[in-house]
Image 1 (tube, rainbow, N blue to C red):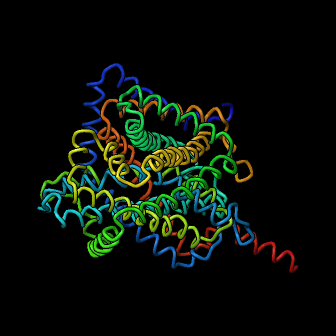
Image 2 (cartoon, rainbow, N blue to C red):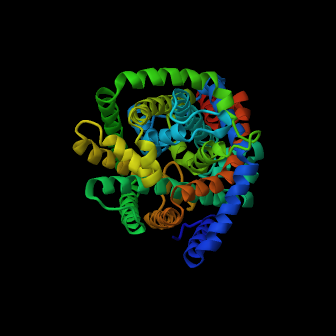
Image 3 (cartoon, rainbow, N blue to C red):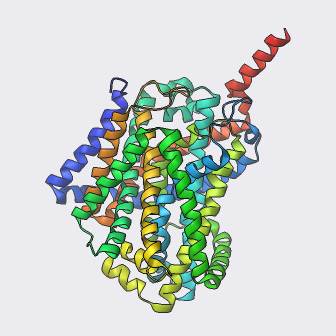
Length: 516
């Protein structure tokens, strides 16, 4: 703890603890405050999340074809820290992979049985099915990964090529210069620590509910705060152990296992599920998604007073922005030695394709079951989304093998994501983090791991899915403002990368010395 950045660590840490304490001592007060704040955010700032997300997509495409795309992160002579396969596996499993295992099956049923009122779609109709699947593409493919890709790319360039400190403020250096590393930089890091603590707690809450549903199916253990506490402890213990082992050990091994299991279960469900229906619905819905991409991306529901976008699309964008702020430090750190175009391919293009495949297969399977049997909507209402997941998996051949395997995938997916995030949180809370010494101390990782686990348990115990959404929305507000600054900074760099790239300047100076 001697290397702790006190002004970065203590404000968000104490704020999170105080919020948890209030929730224990005065549940009604806590609920009133968080609900009021959340309602204000989604009513007044939902449009900002939508616009920022769309701009992220456009900037990703623009930077890929710009001259910045040819630049190598770390300089012309930088050798990759990770192989392409390991890099992709880690990137995939440390971003939204934990979320797709839960929402990929449960979310389509929400949209199928409760489509937006303003669209006048009949529940459980063919039009609602297409809307449901195309919405899954919106929420889990292009835009989410663009939200991760832009800040991570800007940080990677700033950290390795501009030689800036291991700080979120480094991503804004093209706009504010070294002034960003003073008091404002510390404040920015502290705010982003707070947003990520909320975003990560929301994601952990989702994983706890997912695992709880599986435990209920396999062993008849009803979901309860006690069961959630046990699951939270096991998850926390595992990802702290993994995070303590360092990047090249725990997370590298876990992500490789996870990728193989992902591929296996995708192929298995595709082959034994309603294959023809999956392909046909996926094709039709993909066309609908691309045709209405801008309409769906900017749908706020304000004109008709429809709250649906606020509780779904705004929730997701806020969640991604919350995570992206600090996860960018980790994603940027592991990109050393690869070009910017390769970075965009691994952090944007390929994961978006993977997300689309996953949603087509798992979402298509659950939609088909609801359309043919009509039972999942009732399960959702009576038992919650976690029960929907395992009701669908129970119909798959060899379910007695597939469900335990799926539980293991859910567990490993979140542990991997939490591993990288806790490492980034520890790094930004500590001094002395450099490319040569990238790992923070074990104690700071443990502190953040325990804190986030506590907040996750508190929120799902009191508000379950609604609590998870409130956490994400509140954490996303400062993060989206940071992301807008990051977009502007990256555009500025893309116009003339040689102006900011110190590795290029150093290379030229060495060439002159050798020539002389």
